[in-house]
Image (cartoon, rainbow, N blue to C red):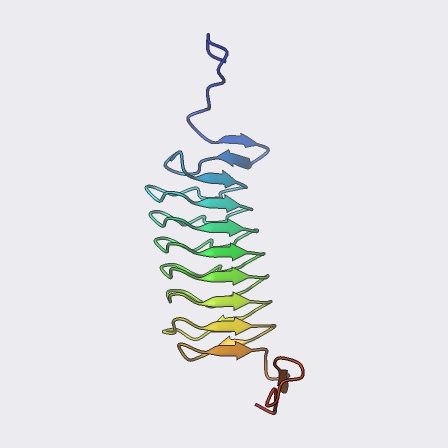
Length: 171
């Protein structure tokens, strides 16, 4: 506490029983880090939020990322504007930007592509795709500008109940 009654923020992250709380590596004002090794090697990346053990652990210059969950976006180094929520969400993303990973293991093998959305447990993609949505357990996206729903066990999609042409058997 300063002489004027104002609380001074510490210049480094606090650690209690190996649980870090602070701004992460680089101690930049616009970053928030909570969890063991979260945002720990950041050098100049700004406006990042890392909550969970090793979330955004490899981030160095990536900006505007949000990682919520243990090991979420842990390999991200320079990727920007990614959102990952769930254990292992976007875990291998390194340079990809503008991606959304929602669910444990979502985007599990995604590394460097752009503007994709992975919703559900173990959704994934092959490399080199952009602007694609993988929706539901095990959905495996393989083409840019596409929507993939579910794994091989899904055999029917209903769209707009009561609409003509809304039943797609055996797609």
